[in-house]
Image 1 (cartoon, rainbow, N blue to C red):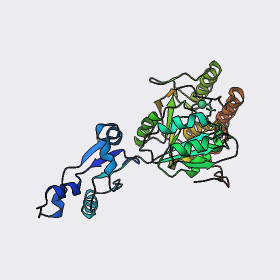
Image 2 (tube, rainbow, N blue to C red):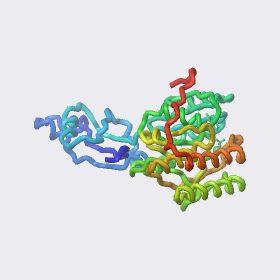
Image 3 (cartoon, protein in one colour):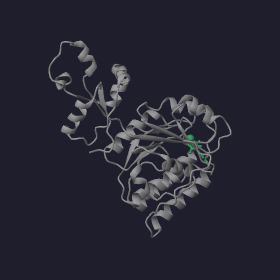
Image 4 (spheres, protein in one colour):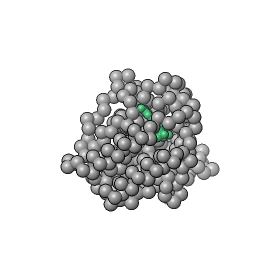
Length: 325
Ligand SMILES: Nc1nc2c(ncn2[C@@H]2O[C@H](COP(=O)(O)OP(=O)(O)O)[C@@H](O)[C@H]2O)c(=O)[nH]1
Ligand SMILES: [Mg+2]
């Protein structure tokens, strides 16, 4: 049984049927026995039937329910237009001064994503206020220690859903692709890497220096681990939350993305790539320094490959005192 289900079960609305046939005197069960329709959640959300989703009285997770247990649930309800299961997903977005970009990103996150966590590194602008205005349900965690790696590890510790998708706040990654990542996790992978270099992927944000660095570092990882990745230094990835402890993550900076990949390789986790199209950041400049951060990536690769111990989880970063849920 996949960990994540992205199917909706549509059942006949009992209330509606009841009012349609007031003289009904038969057994209760007959009211509702219309064959359940299994539908793709995302397709429905996008289709003309979208308004059907609005009147869901009660959603019940059906994962793992045997059919007779399902039947019991079914009988016990007063009203239930639909029973539904949706993917259990947390999206984690590290932010550092992304005020002009964050709204664009949040507005494009699919509505079936259950949890969005912003890990803010002490932005001096209105990043957090804008995020809250656009998505009042966003969880904001403040992590004042410097670095994208620290921010992500703090986000991982705060996440509560089964699947975790890492997304940048600068508008370079299209939130519509979240669905592709979640589908791949659902198929059984522990780690799903976005790739700008495989068929269907692309980037307009890669400078020549970065492209060269990525090529060399990716080649090294493929060589040392007998892998055949088309991509290495790219932060659009999804992970199964239960696999994170095995990754033994301890990186503070941008090398976290590489650490996730190489430590997953060492631990024999199931990894796949999905195509991703990277755009230029909407506004502002990158926080990455190609040479400094490239060296950190290199040392992460070598350390992971040649250390004798298997990756162990670093003490989870403590949430900063001013973290807010
Ligand atoms: N919380 C936090 N987020 C950061 C930090 N550094 C970068 N980020 C975020 O990490 C994401 C990627 O950073 P970016 O500057 O776009 O790097 P690039 O995509 O590699 O050029 C963006 O959403 C940044 O706001 C940091 O020190 N703390
Ligand atoms: Mg960026």
